[in-house]
Image (tube, rainbow, N blue to C red; front, side, top):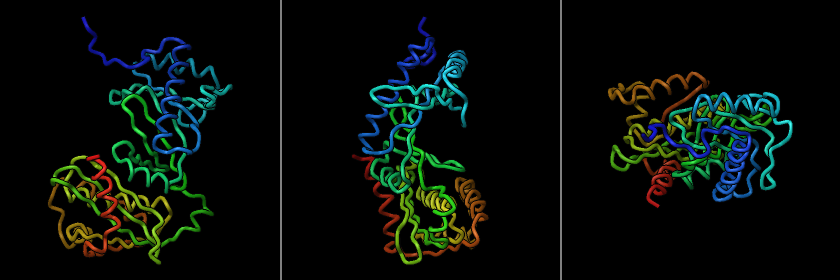
Length: 299
């Protein structure tokens, strides 16, 4: 009788040799993926091997624990770097089984946030932003393995944050081709002189126009918060979102309640946030980020 369990490459890993083959596979394939989308970036800094069965995880965690000493976030700092194809890997992690994650594993490296934003806009089908409370990740997705880039410059040092503007203009826009249909959000952060210092577009999948507009606002505010900005002047061509955020209109659509509440919580992290409705022609930069993401879905 055929097993109903999903089949994974290399799993279950039951020997040290197979584990080494798995790591080499992740490094080699991930390096090739990096060169396609972001050539010349920083080298791979660590590798995560995905266990797909609990017994496999227990075995691998114990095995890798003998290779070095524990570090942060479950990583093991290897006593001797793992070397394959002239690439040296100093740390390794074994990930616990996840029914929604079938990949062999992931390779990690670092990328500047401005380059990350450009890559996401250029390759929305293949690259997505994963936001975390204290750092961001960019995922270069492949069905078999992932490459995760830790984004540098989002959570700046005190000296770097001091150089950033504390008051910014946020232009945010969202769009859905079909309503509901393929959707994306775009946002642009400018200093008071009108100089753009951060812009990004995020493909959302199937949503409505209003959901995409709200997501754009949320993404922009989250980015401003991470950069230590205390005053945000929001400009959007969605009269609905602007008036709902001002409290002029009630939020009647239940699908918008969760994100509206999330944004209300975000507002508490700023000294001041204002909302201004602008004509569409004054929001072209954010709109361009939306269209880049949506156009890329058809290429």
